Length: 195
Image 1 (cartoon, one colour):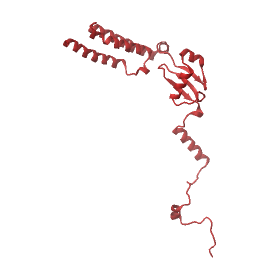
Image 2 (image 1 turned 60 degrees about the horizontal axis):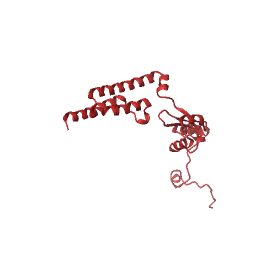
Image 3 (image 1 turned 45 degrees about the vertical axis):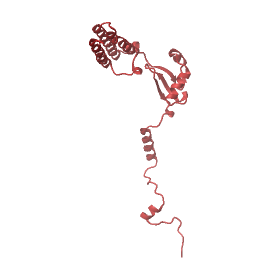
């Protein structure tokens, strides 16, 4: 094995890692279709120098792919229309506890597959869901109906505040037990005449 081939292999790893780092840190599920295509293209291109198809032209082409991807991401940030064209938008599949079958047909998503996603999210009934969307990444986004949402700390504090306003200045409950008896003295709730 030639030393040139070894150094080229090291160069491929270093340059490929650098390009992927510049391209951004996203998992596959967070990537748009354009980003996935660029990453697959990079993987295919980066291996080309080892098979003898030109070291520097391959890296130049890989760099051009990354630059185009970054430019597309910048344009998506600047223009909603461009973002919709390249990335797409989330699609509503449940509204007010009802399936939107026409939107599900567009996504080629069956009710069984949607129910599976809902179960994985801990939702037992479609009627509990106010809104559900299939995001651009393919993930499920949802909002439960108000009465089905879990209580937050803020909700609990609001409830405490309401209760305190309705029943003001109530002393904490002090049971009549042997400890309060030691502090306040023995008080017989049913006094008897021992004479």
